Length: 348
Image 1 (tube, rainbow, N blue to C red):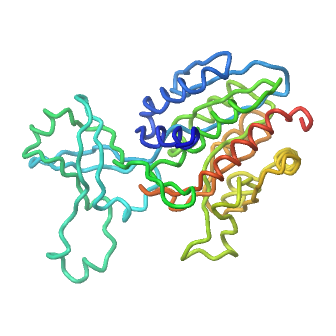
Image 2 (image 1 turned 30 degrees about the vertical axis):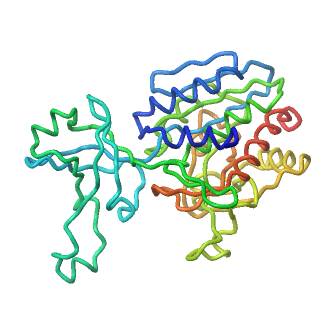
């Protein structure tokens, strides 16, 4: 297994919903320390790694958290009711295996619902909402569940393993945004830059871009790049006129997302990223998205404004337990970011 693939595997199999990013932050810290001069964790939990150098300074933001669940009620019979944390499409949750991160360690469970065999016709034709689902951990009572270390507020993640498909394509949970963390680490490993770089593992992106707001305010960089995933078309159900970005065709540079309510990338940032890619013959695609935002949206609006952009990995089935990407695209993203932080002084 290649080095970049192995790193993605380690990160995507790690667990950390919004507000509980400790395990992922620990991996990032150990991997990035050899390439920076200082590493610190702020009061919100963001990891800030600093590679000292001259201006202009560059902030790289890769969010640590994944979407997940949280215990909100324990039934007398031991079944768990949960709230969703982050943007789930409820149907992807049904019948998944999950991990409850209790006070006494990991507890495994499965998400169930009323069996279709006993549903009325109108029930079978209706989408099952997460509020009608529950988690079965094998407990026979509320007291037994609590004795296993489960309580109100226990965080829950999907239990999935990293698997290789064909042609360099891989699948796992949480490529959003463990792939962005890989890009950030690999870029620092590959780059030889004289400019100041702030590599930030941000927290709670999936629930409001929170970590990006606070770290950008503290660091006030001259320019910033968020590394993340973006929707890949090229499969049934998506027309090219709506989704021109595809897997296997290189890194994605965002021009605009969320119909402009997110980020409209400044021309200076687009010149920087496109110019770098073209000079080094790095394959790239341009993206205009009607939905979805990244940490770059929050950074762009910090203080008096920070020119910001996004480098993304085209990814299928985002916000599901079976996200899919092409390792070659991940390589292109890491190379683009590495060359960009080397040449930022030519543009800013």
